[in-house]
Length: 185
Length: 235
Image (tube, rainbow over all chains, first blue to last red; front, side, top):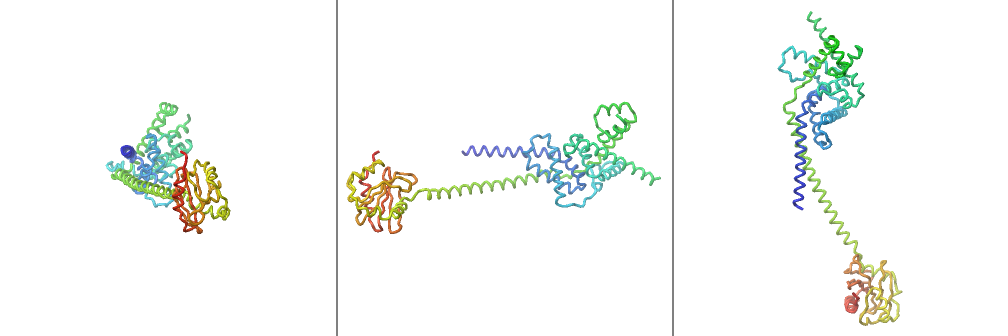
């Protein structure tokens, strides 16, 4: 009887160790992309960090329901989007624009940095329905089909939104160029 | 593929692998240029999107979950302990109650029987012979091996839905009622009772329980001993 108890305890703790390992692999592999996506979703780094923490906590609690590691990315994105929606149920925050946020390319040349800052401002100014599929494509390299599935949308709708998103980005950049040309000239 | 469709498709996905799109790009240097431009834009957006991740985020994510699971396991242990304790408690209490409730107090039952019956048996004045008593007792596999003294009444009767032998006989001071009831685990064969001016004691006699009921003050013990000595059950 005692030996049986010990065995079951041992298997419980080895289950726990397995879970812990799976979780850590998940965090290490995906937290960067998930955090960046959250930043673009909520356009505020502090809020994004909170949501990411909530997301991974939920992921930990229901890790057993994740059967296929390949589905981990879309599973986490789903949790993240739900957490974000929950935040809106609670309270609407004042959000700081993404272009105030420091980014990884600190070391880049001034010119490129200015260009990226401009680009971030443009991307941040897209409405959410355009920004979300675009960022899924840019950050996670999702295909149209995958985005459609993730956002629960028709593929044609997704493709149209992606088209409009890039179209708006291009137009905004061209307009900025013209303006800058005018100011410079 | 016309120009508009081409542009729309590439705008939606610059890395599109559609054969018609790729063919169109191959055929037309202008489209090649357009494709390159779009890819460059994607590259820039990709770089621009790379928000710096806080250095401690990984540790926070892993630490928080460790604390959470630690807390959860502590709570789980407490819950398990509490559940085990309450199950043990309920089992203990219900077992005790079951024991107390389940055993029929046949001494009580016998007084109730005598009381309900009233004078019918107690005032009977028949002179029942030992043979007659034994003839009835034979149903239960027993017999009295010696004379019992004066027996006024002997009859098979219903004792709480069990067929039993009801005797009324002369005790040392006054009549006593005697019930011979087939043995049953649900009977408490050691019960005693006092009620309504009667006292009653039960005892175990091999294959039966015997209950003696007399008026208060009667020598029940003596009757019990006498009966125990004289009754005999075939194995």
